[in-house]
Image (cartoon, rainbow, N blue to C red; front, side, top):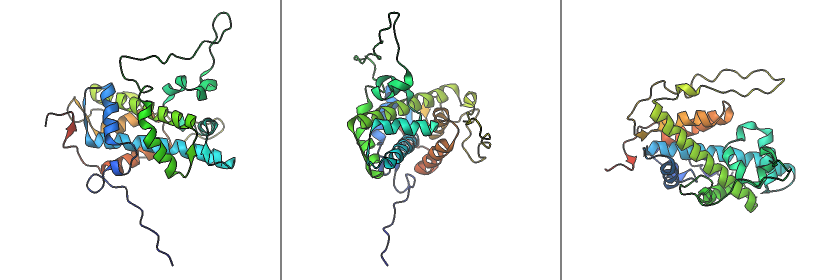
Length: 266
């Protein structure tokens, strides 16, 4: 009888940090947060953001992989991404990327001017301020690692779309986390539940699920782990993906308080 190799456990920063598990390194998370806010970012907050992004991209790739498998392919193409989103609306994240990718042209619609001529898509000129679209290339290494973990590869256009979605999603997550800090909590965001016509309404959100505090703890200049979790509930609609992302983010951070923040003078 052969012995199965032990699988590495996902644990908090006390044993192995999320940087050893997530393909999206803390340095990348730090760079994205700095693009949108001057607030300090605690280490648990960065670990949580990396974990949530990993969970979301893994689900997207898995959905596309299933579509490709039905067509006897192991290399993903943009059409697999569209089919995966069509089958599971929870995967429709990072939508600001859609305006910049030919893959989603049919979803966002084609615009015509008064004379019936197609209006070109949004320009891609240089911006004075870094954007999620301009920085999408930073996610390529992480995306390729996730693809390998699913046992698939992808054509360049598909990799580019996954890069863009990851970049936009994490940028939006950082922006919402900063908003939670500024506004002192996430009470105003509420909860969204998806209902498919002809099917019964989903059960209420689990009692042990993350519930944003009406008043957050901590100072007003540091983004903490719970701020990222609150932002996750904003970015992801109520469903299995959000529950999984929150659960894995808690596991990745080990429920430990932050003792040091990036950007601090210590």
